[in-house]
Figure 1 (cartoon, rainbow, N blue to C red):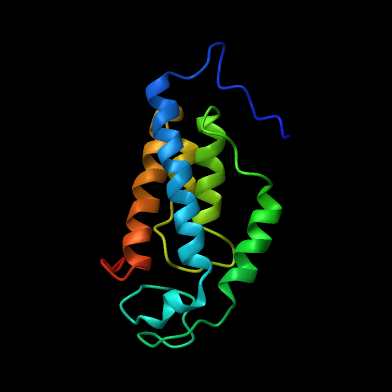
Figure 2: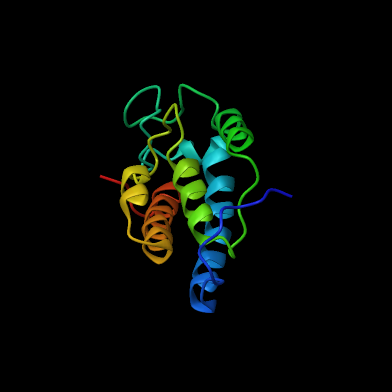
Length: 140
């Protein structure tokens, strides 16, 4: 098991761990949707990595990209380490090269004041991205 950075002198409050657990579950749902090539068959899904704007298909394999990103990031931190989880999640939904399916949050997460703000920022971004990936609400 990986050792995650300490969150401070005391454990995070239960409400923050609960919010981080919700984020963790949503990151898994996002990963499944984003890695599935058929997600991008819907032209309503905003994806910067499309071969042609407004048409199905990507210029890269999302499953391979996300497998590489997850390998580089290492194991997902537990909800009991909310800062580490938020940083990990921001990097996951904004991979390089970009899929272009999420709003950019990495800078905001780094600048956020505390774990609760970081978790909330990534939660909003991943929820918005899931709505995009499901074709319910394009990013733009």
